[in-house]
Length: 250
Length: 191
Image (cartoon, rainbow over the protein chains, first blue to last red):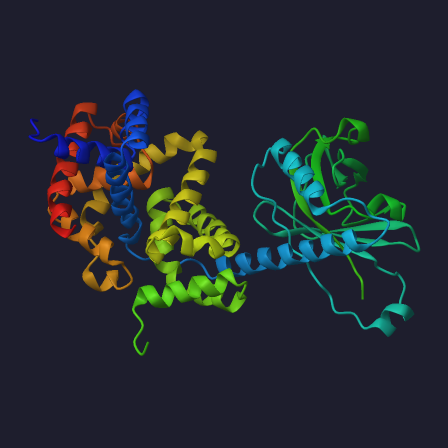
C-alpha cells in the first residue's frame, strides 16, 4: 500500500505502536524516535488514548455476587494486617517493620507453586471479655487458612496457657496416603519454620511455645511426603492453605 | 452540578475511593462492574478467570485510586486499563493452558462477529473518545474490527493472532493494516 505523506506514515506507525502490533526492532526504533521528537511522542500518546477506549466498548456482563464478597474480605484482611503490623511495631519487644514480613511473604509466594496472591481472611469473633476469662481454653491467636479458591480450609488457634496449637479442618481436603500436611510459620524476614505435621483427624493439637507464634504474621500448610520434612529444609511441596495469624487483643 | 455526567459521577467515586471510603468502592463496583466484567470476559474468556481478574482489578483500584487524577484519562478508560492489565497478568500466568484458549478462539471469532458492536444504550458510560472510536470501528469490516480489538485487548502480535485465529500471517497483517488505515482517516475527523 502506498501511503502518501510522511505525516500519514507516522500516524500509522504510532497506531501500530499503540495497538501493540509494532514489535521487535521496529518498536525500539519508534521508541527512540518518540523520545527525540515531540510530534512522534504526541502521535503515540494520542493513539494510546484512542485504543484505551477499546476497553470501554465491550458488552456488559454480570459477575457473580461472590466477587464483591471476596473483594471486601481481602480489604478487611489487609486492614487487619496493617493494624497488626502497626501494633507490633509499637510494641517494644518487636523489631520487624511491616516491610520485612511483606518481603519475606513475597519470597515465600515466589517459592510456592501456587503463585497466586495470598488470600487472607481475618475472622474477628466478638467475644465477651468476661466469658473469655471464665472459659478455657484462652485463645490468643487465630488464623483461618484458605485454599487458592479463598475457601476456609483450616482453622488454627493458639492457647498460650496450654502452649498448644489447635487445628480444625474445615474443608473436605484429603491428602493422599503417601502424603502429609505440614504447618509452617512464616516469620518476618526469616525462613519458614515447621510447627508440626498434621495427622488425618479432623482436629489436631500440636505443642508450641508462644515464642513460636508471636510476631509470626502468616501461617501456611504445605503438602509434603508422608511424615513431613525437616524444618530446616523448608517446605518442599506446594502450599495448599495459608492465612494471616491474628493476635486477639480483646 | 444538578445532572452530573457519567464521567463526573465516576470520577467523584474514584476520588472518594482514593480517600479510603469503602462505601464509595462499593458504589463504584455496583456502577462499573458489569462493564468491566464484560471486558475481563472478552480478554480471558472464562467466567471464573474473569471473576478473579475483576477482584484483582478492584483491589488495585482500592490501592491506587489516589493516583487517578494524575493520569488525565477518562475514568472508564482508566478502570478499563486496570482490568486489561490484570487480565493480561492472568493470561501470562496461564500460558500453559494456551492450547485450550486457541480452541475457544474459533468459537469466539464466530460468535463475537455478531455481538461485537454494542448498541448505543450499552455505551451510556463510555467517554467521548470511546464514542468516536466506536463510530469509526463501524467503518471497518467485521474481521478487521475483530483482529484490531483482539490485538489490543489481548496484547497479541501478528503471529500470535495468526496462530490463535488460524489465519495466514499475511491475512492478519493485511486486515490490521487496512483497519488501522481506516481508523486513521476516521479518527482524524474527530481530532
